[in-house]
Length: 92
Length: 389
Image (tube, rainbow over all chains, first blue to last red; front, side):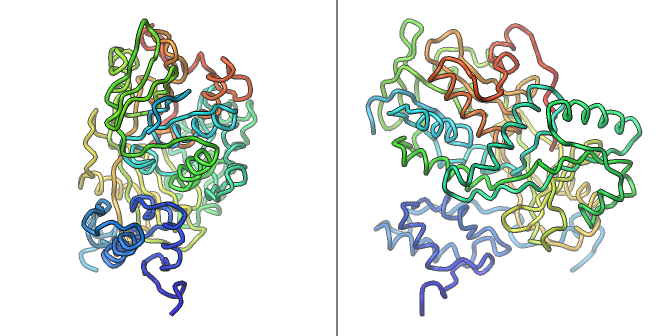
């Protein structure tokens, strides 16, 4: 399977090829990779892609995965309808 | 790490990276930029991405009109798409009194070439289809205002600066400024000392700490960090809320679609501080969504996916401190942007570079008297810069 067909971030449809290309350009900080490609910034909040990105980054830079700090987790942990938060919708 | 530099910039946000780029472009070799975290981690990467010329005083209007011209050409100049879009800013008046204020602001903006105009609620609804116009009497609409991607802008400034020889050290906190006989001599960091005769304090919310390291009183240029927050929804259909929409009377609340993914960014004037705490609050989430759904009722059917906080580095008159600090030779500041640092970055970076290289600012309409960092100690406040969210 070609690297451009392998989706790493499903929320924002970012491929393995795009991630590797950015790392190859010298962008090896996960905070910048996240923001340039918008990986981990969709509805799943990085739960699917971040562990994979960390292992790609570790493999390509020779670091250990546990040396790579996860980007901040943002609230809400799961998507919440605005209507519930403003008290106009009781349940989804 | 380099042991010597012609200029050391402290702070790797939009302001610092823009200064670095412009210094290199003007031929300064040996520029070093120091950032305590990752680039943009202070305030730029937390901002709402808006860029406007709709200010209410001559200095800020002129600077921002110039900045919009810079933003328009920036992707081409930096050879990297920073996604600048002229999607406009739409301010909404909710009382007759406010309509009069808008008219006066528009007159001033028009005088300096910013094409803002007063529009009807019907016209506003054409621009923002899901807008609730029940409370709207009129709008102040400038279609040349816009938004850009803060991540890509900082990345692009830094990338181009590096290509031109600037050394950027991230995760390198400054621990001291060496001053001898009233002159800058060097900068100490956790990773070594750099000798230099010129330092630019571009640390924005952290600028008073840097000033203190140089032996100045923190209150000399009284910049204070106030926690502001944003909430982001899942992407909605493009073209629904492209401009930044703000009824100032509604607690300075605003909504706009993120130019990158089309999710809706929601802000409001609930702030905390002074504080360096960056934790988001549930109180804010409730408050901002109350206003956002008043402006755009259909938002109640979409999901919130993210919330985060950042600082408005506020001065007493909400105008930044830009220029030379007279007490120490070779010490410059561009900080205290009070929520406007990102939108001002291209022109401010160019202006500071001009000041360092030529000793004066000729090309950029940057009013150094207006932004004088010494105005506070003289008790000479400017009229407050128009601020929202």
